[in-house]
Length: 131
Image (cartoon, rainbow, N blue to C red; front, side, top):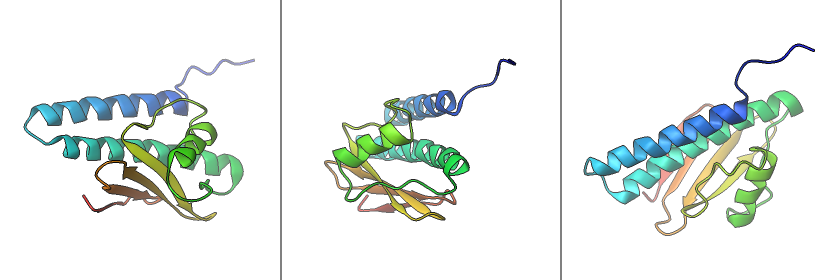
């Protein structure tokens, strides 16, 4: 059997999240506020979930979406069903959920304390609410 020498999607997601966190820390040291840094972390996390969604659709012919609401339960659903139990989401600051259907989706990252919402769709468009 031929051994695959490439990187898995999960390994790439972990690298993207780490780079995002480091970039966030750099921005924070440059005079930005903590809320701006957290917003950047949410952007990076929703980007990771978007990549997992693309992989999910290639295997299941539809996008994944969470059961309802946006809270700790839906965040855990995403970790379990899209990220293969790898905790790549900053659960202490955000609740994550995914709305949509078989052809489109929106990933929501709701800041628990500030109510800032970062949304990313299947076309990689990012929008904000309450930030």
